[in-house]
Image 1 (tube, rainbow, N blue to C red):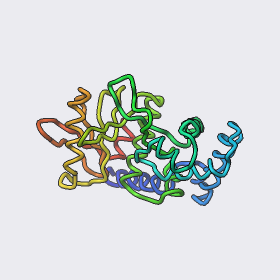
Image 2 (cartoon, rainbow, N blue to C red; image 1 turned 135 degrees about the vertical axis):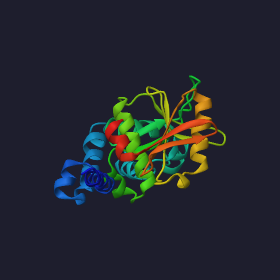
Image 3 (cartoon, rainbow, N blue to C red; image 1 turned 90 degrees about the vertical axis):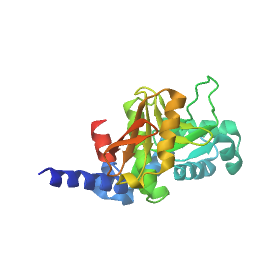
Image 4 (tube, rainbow, N blue to C red; image 1 turned 45 degrees about the horizontal axis):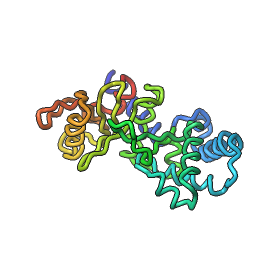
Length: 239
């Protein structure tokens, strides 16, 4: 029965957002997530790269994970941790190499990319819930980011920021723009989300516009543009 299987899929997604997908966490429970997180930090970063300021780096790793699904700037992080921008850049690349955190750059047509700005994403919802606590909107965006990065082998995924609009993802390989929103009906969709897609389409020339939702499916029209709404579970399974 499709209704039954659909509710099972949604329940599995809800569990994944709350518990994460680490095999150890699925068998032993989410109490093991802190040790998974700190093991990766110790083994794959501190020991491998011989990080000198160990305590400061550990604090940095936890703090930056708390910024998941938001934009950070290298300069601000350097001020916050009292360390050079060069060190911050190094630490960021170490964390990305460990596959614990991912950093998505801002989309720009000019070759002089805005290097200082990144959005932070965390490899697994279990880690997000350990460092930052549960939030549908942020976790949905995080999960979509990880899906796109894996699908595109870490290339061609950006976010877009204009003067008065933002787009969560520019998928250059797929020539499409994606917004993520925790909505279940069309009247819950924020005007800014649609405006972001329309303006982003004008800026990039990409015509395929996608709104990943919690439970809304169908087509939305905004300023003459067609926007496809697709639930998160369907996006993850069929994209």
